[in-house]
Amino acid sequence: MPNHVHILVTSSVIAPKWLGPFKGFTAFEANKILARQGNHFWQHESYDQLVRSDSEFDRIVAYIEGNPVKAHLAATPKEFRWSSAA
Image (cartoon, rainbow, N blue to C red; front, side, top):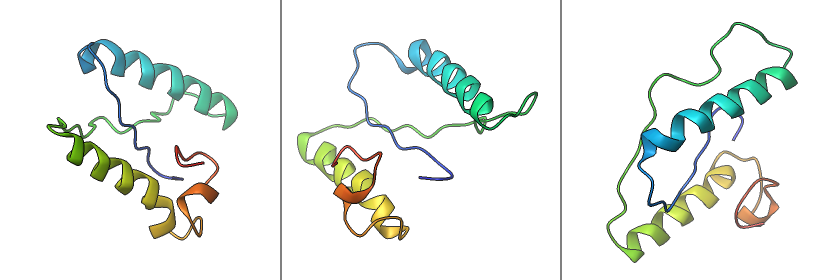
């Protein structure tokens, strides 16, 4: 997505241990590509949700993969270059 990212992770490590390093690394690389310096890349807050069942996990995967289609960036989830459906 051009203005946000969806990630669905299964991890035995709590989010504060990996989310900060993930956001730091990706912000550094994105700002390098965009030739930006001294600007925040990520919004301060992130939204997280605990997945409680396999059916909920599948629903979230479908939502994430369908997001580029809903935004008219691809005709199908598989056509979106960065999709897990590809």
